[in-house]
Amino acid sequence: MRIHAEVHSHFDLEEAIKEITDQAKKVTNAQRSVVFRVGGNPPELRGTFTMRGELIEVTMPIDENSAIGFCALHDRVVNLRDVYEQHQDAPEKPRFNTQFDTRCKCKTKSLLALPIHDPRGRLVGVITAANSAKGFFSSDDQWFLQEYATEVGLAMEKNRLLQESFFAARLTSIGETAAALSHCIKNIAHALRGSAYVIKRGIELNHMGNVKAAWSILDRHVEKLADLSLDVLSFDPERALQEETTSLNETVDHVVTLLADEAETRAIKLEAKLGKGLAKCTFDPRLIYRCLINLIMNAFDACMPKAGTVTVSTARTHHGEVMIAVSDNGRGMDQRTKEEIFELFKSTKGRGGFGIGLPTVRDLVRKHNGRIEVESEPGKGSTFTIFIPDPRAAP
Image (cartoon, rainbow, N blue to C red; front, side, top):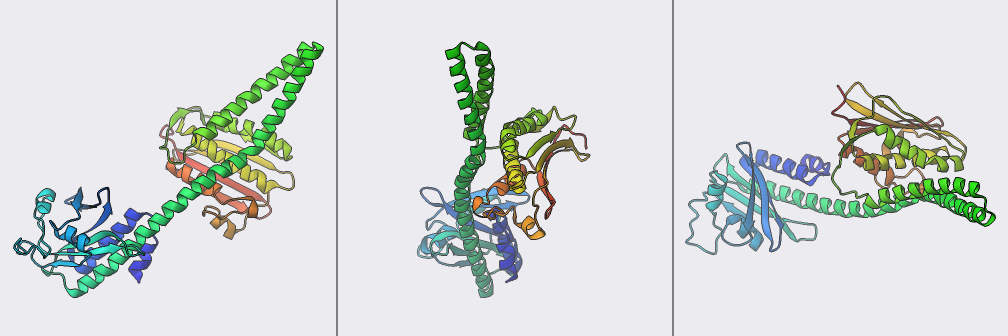
């Protein structure tokens, strides 16, 4: 029960399997334990283990030419007391393939292998233990390894479900981003329509001064719309970090300028307090841009329905990091809400939100090996602070 609880706490499949194999080695007094997973086309068994500090990757066909392949092919437990005494004179019985030892530069004496099934009963892998300290694997060892096989099956199913939910979350996140930016697009569209009207009337009345003034406004908002479109279209949650050495303040100022009209529409005062010495920082501008859009739009929502103030500030810390803080004087959060805001599908906006924005921000910050901290008090507002390591900053 304790082992099940420990394994269940892992959300990373590789960590869960490592925990399982470490425990399996201890309980069965084995020298090593390996989980082989079914994969590829045609299907084969794939596993990794560490031998004398070296990570060894092994692939094995699902056939009768090895004890592990036999276990998977016939969906049967294999328990070999002395693998080199189990000779090839009995084809119907499992045989240990000595090429495994040659390839991995190891010596196998005893071997226990059990099939792993998912909750629907399908074979998804094989769990093994090798070289028992007592020279053989007992029925008790077999019982324990069966429990571990069940845990591996559950961990693999949990991983599959998480991958599916993350895929759905990414699709929803795109929709939420579009919704958050729709106000910006609406305001830009109003400015374009108004400018076009002034230009048209200016041409009709030959008032070129009005045409030039309106054209300047039109040109500026076309640039805004183009930049905004490129940012949205080029955003890919799966893409690798693309760090640049650039000005953090310019990125922050760009977002604040973009959202200025939306703040004015909501009667919110949006201000930037930009620190010094941030002209050259190393980060991914598009991902930080996305984080700021989310945090500032959330701050706007927190200030509604009454007017408020949202402040975006930057600075260098004394710990080799750069800092971006988004503060508001809105409704704030109690402790329980604060603990839940980074959980998927936990929204503080009721039907007005999907509960995707803040988990996305946290994940984008983690891509930078950074962290995000929250301070909040009901009725007094909230501050979300992003810390990003910067190799250019002296610790």
